[in-house]
Amino acid sequence: MSPERTCVGCRARAPQRQLVRLVVQGGSLILGRNQAGRGAWIHPAVACLQLAERKSAVGRALKFSGSLDTSELRSHLEVLERGVSAL
Ligand SMILES: [Zn+2]
Image (cartoon, rainbow, N blue to C red; front, top):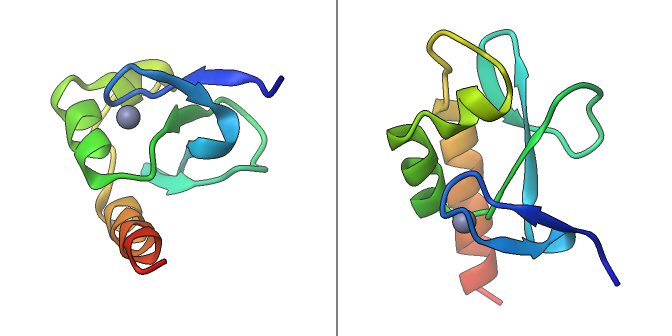
């Protein structure tokens, strides 16, 4: 059985392989499956990122106070979404 994680956006539980891992690096939120330190899991979907941002869930999950730059992550997720729908 594969480990399950909770998406910080929609709060649904999902197998880890269906989610991507977020880490904070220099005040920016980035994808970092193998980065050391505290991580949060989210569906590779812009909708889930928007939910997480609205609830400030990412900062809370990562114990990061202050404003997070999510612009780079958002464009990554947009690419991932397009990739999935192109399959
Ligand atoms: Zn989600």
